[in-house]
Image 1 (tube, rainbow, N blue to C red):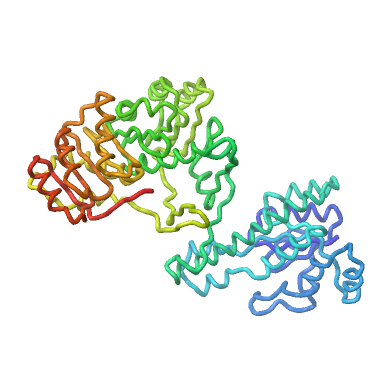
Image 2: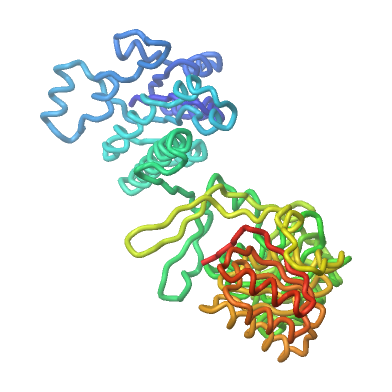
Length: 510
């Protein structure tokens, strides 16, 4: 039995080769892998002894050879293949272990296009695909985490067809992901990221119990291990819907830097938000906005959860609590809640992966775009359109309302008072309805909106929303502007003694 080992990531390769050698396998290798195995005392055959042709063109050609691919691809159970292999002097290669040139690491490290081109692997993917195609007869290993599993299977004669098929699938996933990364990089560099094809690849982080509903299957796939790198699930099994809500809560709570922000989300939209001196105060104030909707909701805490905060949270049923970290005492408190899921990031403040692009499935395809960014300076650089100037506290409230509005389903209107959200209307077909729905809900909750700041993620097309806001006691408004009736909106603000600011940036979220 012969094995061909040719890897860029050489972690564990010596031990793997030694394990194969111990079982009587003959080892063939290339370049740096050959050198490393030889230095470790592994008896290894250099590839050009097999190809009968020297490695050439600075290593661009070394395994692209019929003695290599014939050895991998000929079918052992086919008499004609076996006879032709014998006639041509092709010896079988029964195991291929390959991982590819570090293209991802290269593009993260340099913009030198010549170096990037040289780190596009050709021979590696070709060998992987050859071995995967002939998985009936050849084991293909592309992941160093599988070395021990493969050695154990060989030792116990458990390298079944099903086992080989699993490795085959993994191998084609590996080359598909690699080629997708190269194509996406080239389109990003030369076509502004929008080529004829767009490849979206992710690695499964975990299977969810089901999808949005029990009759649907679901799983979380992540880009570059970002989710598992940023999150550790400490308790419970997160559902498909939990992950969606976690995403919404994280985006809002992490938008305020080091501030003690707490966001409560239900069905992807905020039902509570506050930014106070302590996390306990922030949660307490956030909960006041809509404690009914908060029941069964997801809470994102931009700081470490302690026992006092955990005890307060335990007063109602919550689906998920996510935070940079939890004290041991807080974890003990949460242990009593059997259905609660906990996520931590292992730091002191929440962080986002900051994906560069966003996409959404539509029937028959998907729409793809640059990710939206609500920049910190949008409020500070907003244009004052009214006669009245907002106070310092009102400007803080406007900034909170603006960020929350930009991360809430359109059409939406957000009311913030003393750094806490007091009303929100979202996902409405009419902006007027969103504004009025928010005020109606606040009234039902017994919340006083007078003196609040209001934000709309897109312009007000008519003055009626301003009139309604004035009637509720709103003192400051921020919106993008851009309506043909902006003058009417400005006039209404001045009539009611409301300060009005235009950001000139719209943040629809559909």
